[in-house]
Structures are given as structure tokens and as C-alpha cells.
Amino acid sequence: MKAVLALADGKYFIGKALGAIGEVTGEVVFNTSMTGYQEILTDPSYHGEIVTMTYPQIGNYGINLEDVESNRPFLSGFIVKEACHFPSNFRSEMSLDTYLKDNNIVSIEGIDTRALVRHIRTVGAQTGIISSTDIDPDSLIEKARKAPSIVGRDLVKEVTCSEPYQPTEGLWTLGEGYADCKQTQSPYKVIAYDFGIKRNILRNLTSLGCDVTVVPATTSAAEILKMNPDGVFLSNGPGDPEPLHYAQKNIQELLGKVPVFGICLGHQLLSIAAGGCTYKLKFGHRGGNQPVLDYKRQQVEITSQNHGFAVDEKSLGDDIKVTHINLNDNTIEGIQLLSSPAFSVQYHPEASPGPHDAQYLFERFIDLMKEHKKGGKNA
Image 1: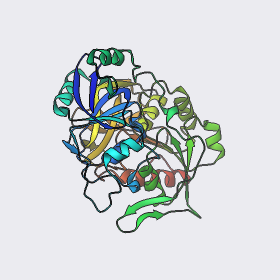
Image 2: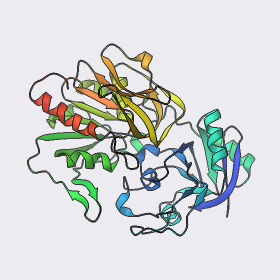
Image 3: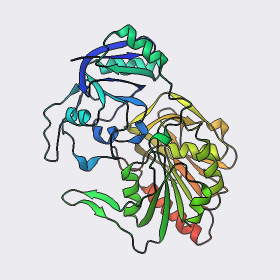
Image 4: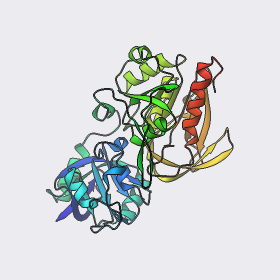
């Protein structure tokens, strides 16, 4: 069945329907990872986005339910050059197409993804539409132009959990699965804000001995402090951080009272809470090969990233120290507050998918909580 991808600027591509039949709008972006499509599909940070995979064939190793990063796919749509309909892997449970159909994800294959990505890199990420029910390009371009932008929208409330919960799943080992990390006498109680959290973040924390409680994004600072945590974690999540005033206010009220560690959207929210601001990148950083320099260790790490906004360095005051930069474009990749036990990174140290170069950051959070419990200075 024919399907069409149309962009708000008038560009369109004709391909074949993949996954669910229907019509969907979102911001069209691209991810450069060669593998990890299943983790990308189920990352809540992609809510509101139509994701293009730059690698030409996607779906080779199928889908297995053990590798999902949340309870379902959250992205708006999916674009691939060629979908593998007959996967081969000992862990595969179903094909990519079946998984997309089962989860009602409208997708398209058979278009020139290289041309699409070059176009996005030139003009920037923009609103688009995939349809297998309306295949008139002019009609779809008009719909794309009328669709809401991702800027200024609160997408976090659409992906956050409704009730607190306590994860006990640890890191995965081949042949053994996920470790059982139910804590009985943990030295570190961590409250994790769910702005769109990935499961592998939680697995890293529990595997290091943390007793983790995940709470909805709107949970007040007062409620958090009543839980008497040793640390607060600010998760990844979708969209624009600027309209999330409730989150910024809660973080401000927590600073100086408890150690704070933020990732991705959590990094942006911490920066805003500390007086900074953010801006939208032309086409964002999405992939598993972004080089980042850690000033403290004077080491370069290859990182997994997924974000369309960045922190404006010119907006940062004297209380914020830049700790990491992106070596491709010199954008800020990490900060540390000088007057509070708080730090954050823009990238994803938990990988899934991606390299494991930055997993030391979870241990840095443990050290920060340890130092704070002793009454010491900021780690």
C-alpha cells in the first residue's frame, strides 16, 4: 500500500506503508544509530516526533520484549529506507512490522532517507505528516502546516507515570536476564522524577544499590522532601523544557537541600532552574556516536544522545560550571552547580542503545550522595 511523507515546507516523499495504516503528524527528525531501533521506538523522549533511521535496513534482528525501554512505543511515526520483514536472531520474537502494527505506529518505508536527512540538515527539523489513507501530497502539506509545533508544548504530562512506583530490575546479562535488585537495606534512597524516564536509567541506579522510587513529573518539592531522599534524579523526557514551569519551580526548591543528578531534559530543567535558558537546535543530536569532552577527567567519551534543545552558555551565571562539551558543535553537554550538590549531562550515560563510556556518571552521583550525607562539600 502506498504511503506519503509530507513536510510543512512543501517537500514530500512517496513510499510504502509500514506498521499501522493511518495518518500521523509530528516533528520529523533523524537518528544515526546503526542498531537499537527497538530502544528508540520505546524511548518516551521521542513523544511527538517522527523518527527517521539513517541506517538503510532496519529490523534485521527483529523485536524482543526484553529490550523495551518503557511500556510501549511513544514516538508519533517511524521512517526507514528498508524494513526487514524476515528477521534472524535467537532472541527475536516478532518482526518490526508486526510490532509497529500491534502498537498502532503509522510508519513508512521505501523512501530516499538519505535525501530526507540531507534536507533536514539543510533547512532544520520541522513538522511533517505520514499518511497511508490520504496520499494527496498537496492535502498532506497543508495538514502538516496546520499541525502544532513541538515548541512551547508540555509533552511531559503525556508520558509521565500516574502513580509512584519502585523498580527492582537491575542490569541485563546474557543467559541470565535482568538482575533482581530489590533493596532491603540500601544506603541511598533516590527519588526519580519521571519526565519520560527510560528503564535502563533505573537499572543502573538499582544495580549500584540505590532504593529508587519513581514519581510523577508534577510531584511537588515538599512531597519529595517528606520522603527524606538521599538524592533526586531528573530524568530524560520529550520536547521543550521552557514551558515546564512546575518542574523548574520544584527543582529550585530542592537545590541545596538534596543532591541532584539530571540527564537530557533533566539537564535542561536544572540549567533553567539555576538561572539559565535553552534554545532549539537546528536538527538536534540523535544517535550513538556523539563525541563529548569531560573537562574534569580530560577524556573524550562517545555518547548516546536524543535531544532537540540545548542550554545557552551565554545565559549561565557564575554559579554554574560547564563540565562537558560536544566536540562536533561545542554545545554544552554537562554542568555542575558550585553552591549546591547538583550536576547534569545532556547525553544518555545509560546507553540503550549506544556506548557505555559514560556510565561512571551514576557512580559520581553515588559519591555526591555519600559526601552530602557526611556533611562535606559538593563532590
